Length: 193
Image: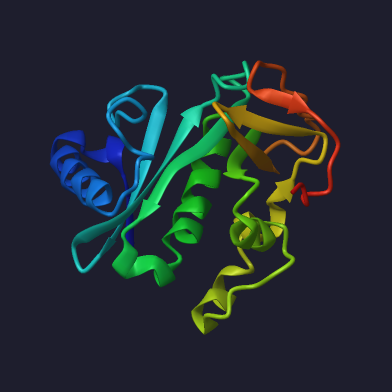
């Protein structure tokens, strides 16, 4: 698999992302609607994963306007992988590129959010469960897998969706304490029902 950044050649990649977007709509995904995602937004960088010259997955990193610290925190979001390729671990592959990029850009925190109701994914992120796919084992030595931590002092809320926050410190001396209308201060252990 090959990973590319959208900013390397927007004219080449824009039509591929549009075709990919349409496929995600057909699959029922709404994470990269036109209202939510524009690859040409200067506050967003998009990574694309290709297999056999086909775009099979994207993931974006955006300066975090949600936490009022867009120069400090970057949110990885808009991740989607086409259903036929779900066991390729594209997210883990792209994540290592995103961490390196975020560090180079001077961010101190890289984070993701995930719906508290999705227990399977949250158990993976919280290391309470491992993928059974044998090819997954080669990814457990990366920085994403080793350093992604659950934030236990707050949650993230958009609309009616309450989400856990998982972060990677890009600057080990930085203590992240985001404040915004999207942040709900609440101590928890990652097992909210």
